[in-house]
Length: 243
Ligand code: SF4
Image 1 (cartoon, rainbow, N blue to C red):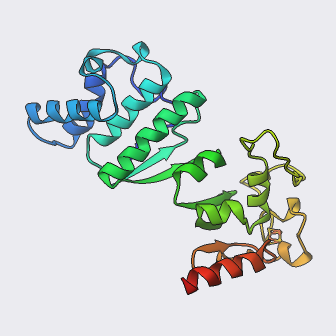
Image 2: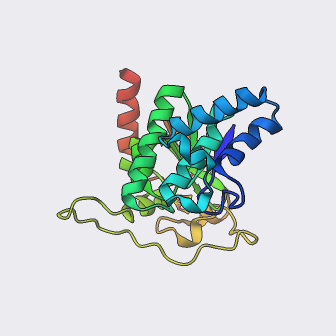
Image 3: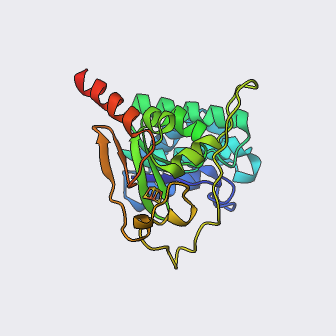
């Protein structure tokens, strides 16, 4: 398992060349002779679309997108099965984001890699992820196939998140669901469902008990006593089951 960090500027050592940064994990894990390590480093830098000449340069000589490619190459050199990508494109320009996402898609396809992709950008999540877990104050409150969760959210918080994500359609009009209050301090969580002080559907019992994550269909679960779209979800679940 390897990790790609959010900030491609801070996650590379400015005093080391790209070759040194990419070789270090291989040396630490004693991944072969000096020659074998050199070959793996060369393959990794090519795989992320950078030239061999990049290996003897320093991080400040690259753009943000190129640095993120170097971060991805550093994660690839150890041949991981899973990469945790922590907001890997949020610090990049939109056009560069698309290129990095394309690269990650290709790695997913060609290497059979799995990603745990952490993001606040639901457009990116919809594009990249097969399944989604929505978290609120450290707990998973909804989980399921990306299309299901984003098109038919069951948890009121997921719906607010979804509705606050802009649509790439100038004619589209969204009715925003307002969310009241502030995020509570993680050191002083509300009782019961932690979303209850801000939830428009809250009832007295929501403050008394923590809702467990329960399946609404084979591929969609929610932690809420009074979920949205429960009837729609049941119909989708039934049709998936029948298929
Ligand atoms: S359990 Fe109650 S307070 Fe929590 S999200 Fe569901 S309806 Fe709202």
